[in-house]
Amino acid sequence: MLTLILLGLTHVALSNTGGSGADLPEPLLVWCGITATIAGCAWAMARQTIALSFSARLMLAAAILLTLPLFWSPSPDWQRDALPRLAGLWAGMTLYILLLNCHFSARQRQYVLWLIAAAATLQTVYSLAGLWAPFLLPEAGRTAAMLSPHIGIGVFQQRNVTASFIATGAAVLLWLAADSRFTLMHEAREKRRRIAIFTAIVLLFMTLTLLESRTGWLAGLVIWGMFSGIFFRTEEAASGLGRWTVRCAPALGIAVGLGLMNGTITRALQDHSDSTLDRVFILQQTWQMIALHPFSGWGYGGFPWSFAHFIADRAQPLYLEMNELTHPHNELLFWWVEGGIVALAGILLLLAAGVMLFLRRPTRHKLALLGCLLPVLLHMQLEYPLYQSPAHWLVVIILLSFADRLDAHERPHPDMFRRSSLRLLPCALTVLALCGTGLVGFTFWQNQVLIHFQQSPQQYASRVLRLYDTRIGSERLLKDRALSWIVRYQASGNPDDLQRFCRLGRRWIATWSDPDIYHNLINVEQFLGNGTYARQLRSEAQRLYPEDPRFS
Image (tube, rainbow, N blue to C red; front, side, top):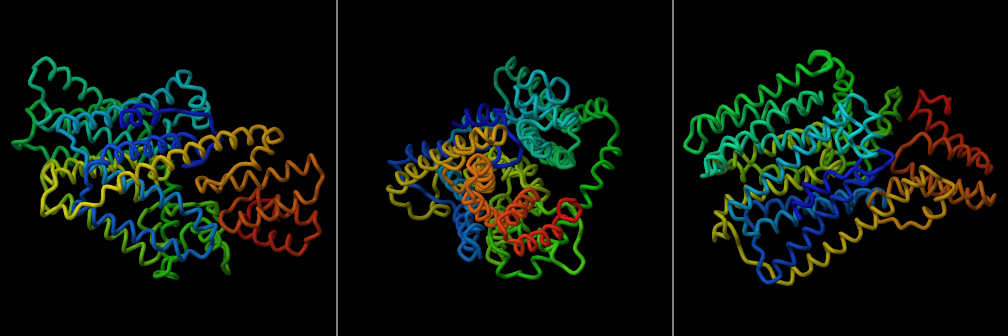
C-alpha cells in the first residue's frame, strides 16, 4: 500500500476548479490510500497485541489535549469545520502506532526510504515538465501549468508544498549516499547505486533552485549542511566518494539551477517581498488575537471568520486583501489561537515527545531521520502543508515511526513498552478505517459532482442539492448547495428556493467569508423585501471588502 500511495496516488492529476485540501480531488485519493493502509495493518495485527512506546504515549496524550477544545467551540458549524483536521490527526496517530508494531527489517526500511526518494523524484520530473514541457502533462496538469506559467507547482498545485516534498526526498537521498549501512556488497551494483543517487541529488537540488520557493531554498540549505556535518569522517560514514557526493552533488545542482533561472536570486527574493510583509502582518494580528483570548481561544474551526472580522471590525479597519485567510501560516499559532491554552499544551507536549525521541539518546541514525523531517517541519512554521498534502503527513508518520523503532531496539522492551491492549482493538480499528475509506471515497465522488456543477450549474444543480455533507470539504459543499437554490429558482420561480438560499447563505458567512456570497445574499434579501437586513449585510461587506465596488 505504501508503494501504491507514494508512487501512484500521490502523483495522480485530476481536473479541478482550484482550491486546496479537500477542495482538490488528489488529496482525497491519497487519504483513501492511507485509511486503507490503516485497515490492512490493523487486520494483520488482529492476532497480536499492540504495544506503545514512551514517545507514542506522550503523543497520544498530546492528541487528546488537542482534541478537547473542540467541545467548547462556540458554533456547531465551526466544530464541523474542525472535524476533518482532528480526524486526520487521529488517523496519523493510529498509523504511527500500527507502524511501531510492524516488524520492519533493515531491508524493508531501506525500501521505504527509496520509495520516499522515488516519490520526490517523480514530483521533480512533473515540476520540470510543467516548467519546460507542459504538453507532456495530463490535461489537468496542462491546465494548472497554464494558470501558473513559469512556476513548477507540481501535482500539489502549490510550489512551496512541492518544494518541501522534493527537499524531503533530497534529504533521504543524502542519507542513502552518506551512510555506510546502505552500501551494497556487489561492487558493480554499488557503483550504479551511487551514480543514481548522485544524479538524483543534482536533479532535486536543481529543481529546488528553479522553483524559486524560499521554503524550498531554506530546507535545501539546512539539510545539505546537516548531513554534511552528521557524516563528517565517522565510522558510520560511507567511503570518501559517498561523503563527496553529499558535499558536491547539491552544489552542482544549485549551480545548474542558477544557470537555468530566468533572472537572479536577488530578483526572486524581491518578487517575494510583498508576501513577506503579508506574513509578518498575519503573525502580528494572530498574536493580538491570542492576547485577547489566550486561555479559551477563539474556537476550533473559527479562524477564517474571526481573523476577517478582527481586522475589519475596528475603529480604523485594515484594508488588506486577507479577508479569506484560513490559516495564520504557523502551525503552533493556529492551534493556540483557536484552541487556547489547552491546545498550546498539546502542541508543547508533542514537541517534547519529539525532542525526547530524537535527542534524549541521539544517534546518527536518529539525527539523519530528523534531517529528513526538517523540510516539512520548517514548512509547517511558514504555511500549512499537512492540510494541502496528506502525502507530507504520511511521510512524517513513517519517519517518526522509524526513529521510534530504533529507540525500541526493533522489538518491545520492558522499559519502553507497558501492558498490551486488548486484541479487540485491532479489529475495531479495521472496521473504523474501512468506514473512513468509504467516507473519503464517497466525498471524492461528491467532489467530482461539485466540479461539474461549477462548469455546468444548470445541469448539476439538482444533484448538488441531493449530496450528503460528510463533514469533509463542507465549506465548498454548503456554498455550492446555496448557489444551487438560486439556479433552481431561475428555473422554478418559487420564492421558497430563495428563502432556502438565504438560510444557507447566512449560515455560510457565519463561518467563512466570500464576497460573491455576500453580494448574492444582499441582492436576494432586497428582492425578498428584507431591506434592513440587506443594509446590515452591505455595511458588513463594506468593512470586509472595502475595495469591492459592489458594496460601495
